Image 1: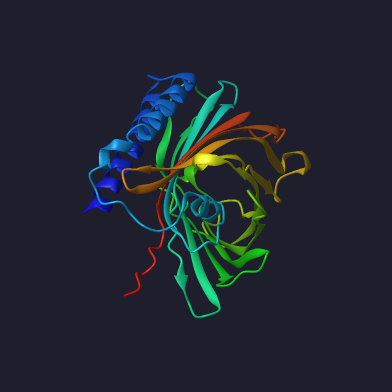
Image 2: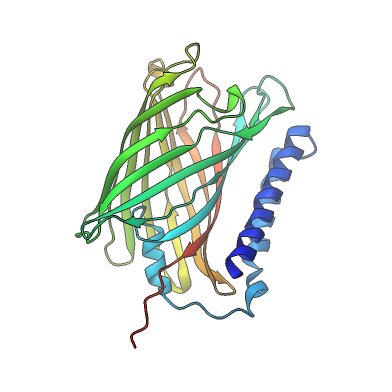
Length: 311
């Protein structure tokens, strides 16, 4: 089946990223070398379009429609993003962390008025031991599902609202919170000609879990600005601003600024969204070790709904 082979290609990509992380953990790759390794992986995937050229061409959404849909968190578009985030220069030894987020999105039509859009983030994390020049921990982090309820027929302002959860699934204490957490999530955006401008925000509070672990009271706010261009290219800025409300005054905020470029293209017949962006943390906690900048590489499989042919 075509979809099965495509997913296998991306499994290989994710395993290669994990291999690079393992090499970094053992000291075989430096942080800068790892950056070029990942960029090389992205380039090799972008250049592998011919691998599926023998398959039947898929009908459905145009490039422009896919640009708008991929930039809308509550669009009726099935997608499987693989988003790799590398955080650099942490602690006295300038260590690096790496998180590969697997984020399947499968919208469901509840009735004529409402869609349900579950967005599940499954993080695979390498976290450096910042007290040493080498070594760290690799494993599964806390899984983060969000369930947006959105109108099936949105107005100019597109929006969705629902619960966000944080599940204590981490395979090591250093990779998660050890707490069950819940809170509200909201997304709102507009898509004027050639642009997508919006915000996605949630706040989580812990309500159960390991009693010795600190309570969770944290906000995540992501604004996103995209400008679409010809041939599927687009400019993007979508930093994630985070706040730990339980921290002391000078350790609450992590605020990145930056942006990048992306493109909607096809691997054979399979629509794919690829992007590369970098962010510098202009505000960081004073006392808590945190990265100076982040590199984000994303590849997303897109499965637009194919309209039924009329007889």
